[in-house]
Image (cartoon, rainbow, N blue to C red; front, side, top):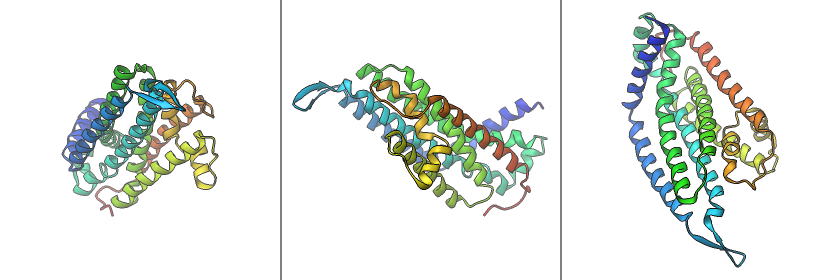
Length: 270
């Protein structure tokens, strides 16, 4: 069996495993509530507000609302990718199905990337629905162009790969609860550091290091959809953000492949 066919079969199996997990019900509920919130936000963007005694059409500021909504949803779906990946590899290791899968024979790289693809399929689909709905409603109700949303989705997808691969790598060393807490803490801390930097408030200490050298999870998305707010001037070089995002995603995948190659099959995770 070719590596490509093995990957395809294992990825389909990984998606089926992900769909059967209980967390999917919670994801569905949160997604529905998010869609209702998106509908309400974009409905408000069609009215009129008074600024300094002068009437202004809300579509004039709809870009800022769209940027904020799109960025928050992107970060939420990145965290979701980490949550799904946090035990999507340890589960088959603990129940012994990983040994059966690798006995086909299948390379370890094919197996681990198929498991990652299964978790990412759910996260990217959820992100596609939420971000696509946001872009579509903003385009219909406020006239914002969909182009920035496409760039924003690509930035989100690269960030989701990074978070999921790192969470799956950490699952080989730490327990599930600790991994989940670390996912939310890391995504939140990086988002805070990026936000402070974009607001021209240079973060110091650990936040400064996260903003300067960590994956630009929030910065990349904000810069990608900044076309909705032409008057917004953002610091930094977009090309540097793209480069750092790709390096982090690639490095995370390599780290996952390397760590899984050194796992003793049949061991029990904590």
